Length: 393
Ligand SMILES: Nc1ncnc2c1ncn2[C@@H]1O[C@H](COP(=O)(O)OP(=O)(O)OP(=O)(O)O)[C@@H](O)[C@H]1O
Ligand SMILES: [Mg+2]
Image 1 (cartoon, rainbow, N blue to C red):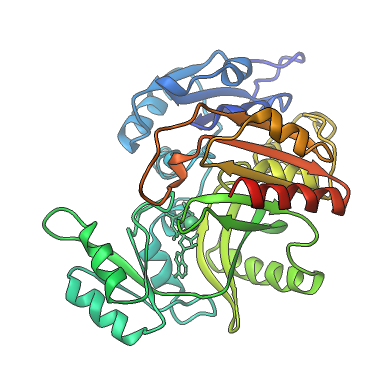
Image 2: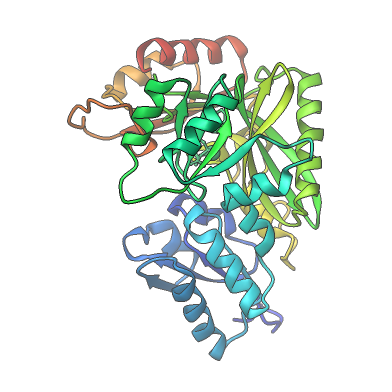
């Protein structure tokens, strides 16, 4: 636990994380202990540290008990998590054990969609909303918002249990999905327009907008099919408007440290907020940000606590002007894909065997593969995107 000159290394406890994220943290001079789900312990985590605590889940009691046990024999300097399932427990552990890390109040606001909406009522970020406990309450809200509403689980993620309701038929279908005796659903006014997300990094309360991501959904579902980071996603003026809006938003929720993935609609009435996630964007958005800006939101979040001058250390990723990821929900031959996308650099490609056919709209969990690619030429990039849109959509 010491450096070459006898100094104690700072010790960070991480809660979970996708195995691909762990190489970002090498060379920062930290000692890491990682609480990880048994079946998610992968080669990159093993390469980062031998100190792995397998856990059954990331429930707050398990996480706090495990970190308390670790703290009996050694000091823990920071607690952090970059994964949706670990955020709240990491923030609770930081709070209860007085160890710096994720801020609990900002984390609670981001995770609880109703709390966030209520907190932002009467601000420029307000969206009409109400909690509904009966079908009659949902119907009454739809009458007040004839352009439509969105019903969602206030604590949901991954678009599960999110229903867009524009008429009585949609409403019946959404209500049919509600099982159990009662339900508690957040109803929001439907925000029309184009959806983008904004990838940010806050260090010591200073916000940086790194990228705006275009998001395309799979057919008539909420399953995410394609993410694009490129100078063409929005023009410079819009980028500045979006950046200023997100900086005001982050200041409003008093966000002090770490990445955010902010979902926004560009509407005729200006920007409207869907939600804030206090983590790196899902799928490969973090990689797209890194490919196009050279900034790893994972690494930079922890690097500011490092005593090692590590500015030049880390995976050498080329800088590209254009980067995209595409998630596959239908089978595709990887060799056909490689030859069709010869004009771009393929950074990741993974395709699983064809699944049995589903006769319902896809969800994010149904994806059977993905590709990440990048390049510096607009024409080659557009050709690759067109190919995917025509053949893999
Ligand atoms: N008020 C709204 N108006 C229009 N569309 C909405 C609204 N709320 C949600 N949506 C659509 O539904 C999607 C999922 O909603 P939301 O982000 O609130 O749920 P989630 O479970 O956190 O999803 P994810 O984890 O995939 O981001 C949004 O990305 C957006 O496309
Ligand atoms: Mg969302």
